[in-house]
Amino acid sequence: MALDREKVLQLCNEWSKNTLMETLEIEYIDAGEGFLKAKMPVNSRVHQPMGLLHGGATVALAESVGSAASLMFINTEKQEVRGIEISANHLKSKREGTVFCTAKIIHQGRSIHLWEIKITDENDKLISLCKLTNMILPRR
Image 1 (spheres, rainbow, N blue to C red):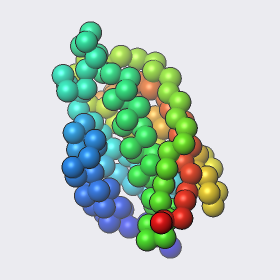
Image 2 (image 1 turned 180 degrees about the vertical axis):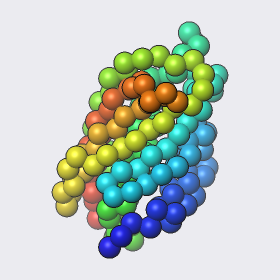
Image 3 (image 1 turned 180 degrees about the horizontal axis):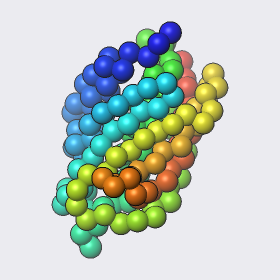
Image 4 (image 1 turned 45 degrees about the vertical axis):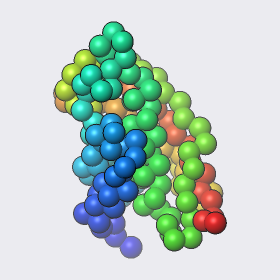
């Protein structure tokens, strides 16, 4: 079954309403076989006290995109996604502009999804590299 890019993006952006994703102004912008991409503005709302992109905001972006990406592989009426582990290496700082987050599937099992998530800037420079493990559970 082919991925309906527009439907995936619409659903992800709709599900973000009234959540942390909306607070952080995360917008899903691209999807394809095995990946999901979003962007987030870097401004004072996501800064730490030194005026730089907060590592926690970066991790929240990564987990949001990786968890949403797992939704592409499950039946959302019967299953749900839970992030169970995330790790992040912050490699470069950012003061303003936009960061882009791309989650790519590394392992797609029945009960575990493993994602590699790259956060880059407008010039495609790597800001953070993350790994997210999601557990797929039956919906209750």
